Length: 332
Image 1 (tube, rainbow, N blue to C red):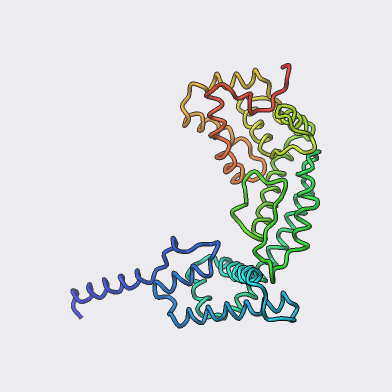
Image 2: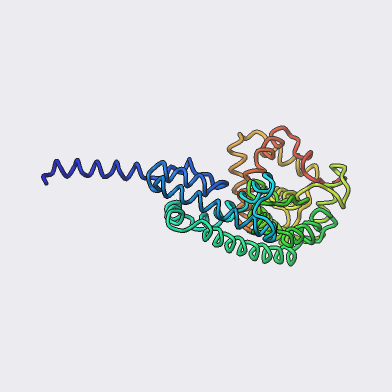
């Protein structure tokens, strides 16, 4: 074969490889098994016959789930229940395939392993998530903030535990719960045990950060926030970490004594004078540099939270209204 023929063969091979590449934009992690299957068929990694076998396997796994749901008394259920059970089956299968962290490996598993077995592997993966959530909850309790906020206390003491007690991965793997106290970064985009585990993880990060400040400082700050916003001490709908982190950031910018979370109206006015004439990017850079001094808790989580906090913070600083969102100590 001459060099020209080699070039033509190489081009054809490259084109063939490209046609068999998964387009990740067509794969949805919230519906991973089915969207991966569709995409794998489209690009030729799974044949139509193999896809039919996968779909039959899903039906078989659903039938097994129905028998579990009815304790073996019936092989049929209402349509709504069947849809929920199907969702649960696919959620468990998704859990295993996603744990491989590689779309091509997941495709091979989907092509070569029977769905009922993938379902079993998925349930084992979800059990691991349950144990991880239990461990994270224990960490949350050990490092809890001593607060009168009932939403916080109920979430850590009761709600997550109640969810874990009733979570049935065989029939309700996709079911989540609504927590009355939520971490600053929402986990609402996740379902099932993934959402609860993420919430427990985020709360543990928030507790770790807050533990670097005295509880008297935190409670004084919290009560100032409640007074300023007209909410009760026991039922305030506020994320404690958010107000602690924001106050700590601004106190550090003013070079206040380490550990203080107390800001006065005059402190807020000073910050507005110092930063108010800067453009948004400069204010952001200055506060990000200040945030680098706050090494407590999880740095990546703190950075993600700062990205959420900054736009509002920059806006009120430029408008001279910082005192409207910061719990200020009155009379100072």
